[in-house]
Image (tube, rainbow over all chains, first blue to last red):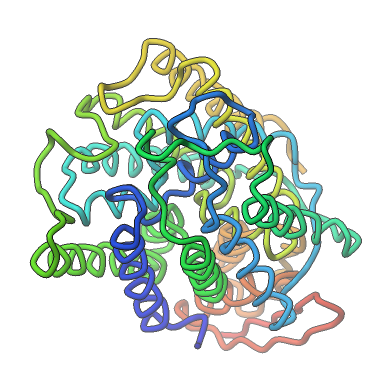
Length: 360
Length: 68
């Protein structure tokens, strides 16, 4: 596949959209074939980093994405261990992005999937996401940079893929200290068979690595460069998801497409906070150089700065459930609203300091 | 000749720096990058702006010559 072709990324997006819909057919929660934020959150729960019983499961999709990207990067000679570009700052941004995701109840990837399932609340999320991206682009144009990365020893780049493989072993062995949501106990209990999820994740990891797919990069490149390549992948996921959901609704007993605001699966109808949550995510994703999916893929390629962002997402998810920051179907929490406002302020400070604070 | 050292920077920064050099009206620009994604993105952006791009690789680093 030609990495630069628009056709390539459109085909990849279509395949990814179909896979996302099929994962729901195979058992994942509704409108959640993929959600990087939710799946990292579930994994945090399985490891006991938070104690919210409904959302505890080691999600093989996350493992598959990291290992798929790692494998294809090794095969193509693109595996390149590096780091040193403001790692702790990236950890903090990752944390803030997770707070925003769990306010909205989904990462940018799930936002598209929710739109493809007819969840109109995601339109408010999309508006916030776009505004956040514009905010980030403003700082990029003013010279925002987290400075250079440096080459590291190969072992550094292998650590996160090795951890992913170890997590997979824990999932298979299911020792008593790993928490799993009880059957019918919440979204964590809904999942496709382990190997279906793993393979689905690996295919998405491989396609995303080859095409550089990024949900935040799409709109960013349109605004910055009038380059429509990445956003065409974003659009293709939506189209494939929508069509597949309509087909599945017609062909099966289940409902995969339900248009409206109320009664959407694992979503709430508070428009303002859907918007502000995804504003935080869009802004943070631009500061990181990519959405949560892209961070996983880059981490698989050996980028330890992205691995730090992934750890920030993980710890952020644990905080969200330990301190009542995450929304639920009933709506956002007071604590969550305060946290989102703080995170927007933190991102603004990080952006300002790294734009105006230090000139090379 | 303009020179852009974008080694260690990840996208979109290499493209932003290259475009700044392009906007200065340089006919020849040398861009250094150290990852394939940046090489692809700088190439696409430069070709779009009417430059011919040739690339040489040395130990994971790419030296890109952009010519009008």
